[in-house]
Image 1 (tube, rainbow, N blue to C red):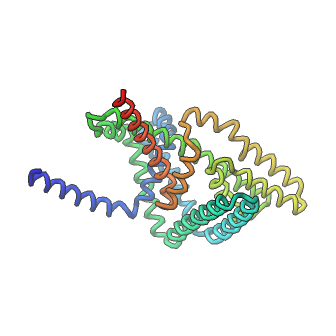
Image 2: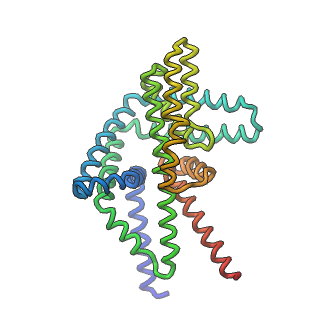
Image 3: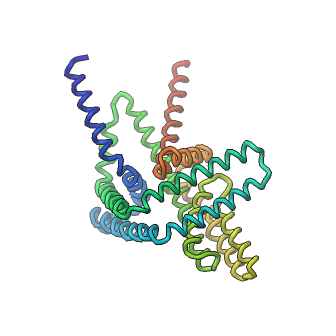
Length: 331
């Protein structure tokens, strides 16, 4: 190898290292900005036809800014109460799960998994809740990246495909398409619907008197987490709320919450909305998604919610391509 090549490789590695150290503290808002921009991109394209691209991006960025401001001050005001309620709900759910007399290995594994995920989420929220300036900086970065992605989405897509090497362009295109399918399945189908259910459950718990606002928010968060698990879902939370109202003697509110839960939380949306979303997106193996989501959270924090499933989806594509190549070589 020529000395010139070695020098350029060394310079490139140094630049990449410096860039990574610069971006690393802000990687979480960047990843979430990319994810939210991807989710809202179809809406952005529709708005861009009526308005222009920049006006559509400005409108969506302004809405996201309002949501972020509410989220930041909501965390500051309700964090302790929400965390306390969430811990209580998780402990009660765990005790109920372990009371099902499951095999010891499954019970212990589930207990360790729930405890680790709970610790990671609490640690992440605690780190950012105690620093308003950090939260505001993260919000500014989020909005800047979100706006930039929407405005330059077509140019970025063209640039991504242009960077693919000509020798194995087919594999590169397949990896990109697999990444899109995984993002559709995780973000636009599974996660988006789970968050929607969590919001509805929060409203139901609060207005029907199951809990105060902090407790209702904690129940909504728990609903989102349970919706990400195979078989288990948010129905556990609204049933627990209905039982609580019934034991308190408020039978009318218990019946109302039951109807509300069946129609809008689970299983109603799973029968009516989810099939339509899955038809537009991609189906993903529940076990793969489960490992990706919770393993990603344990390994990377909250941003692992997105990194984990996408990484496993890309790995499965590489393995399928490797199998196909071995099959061609044998034939």
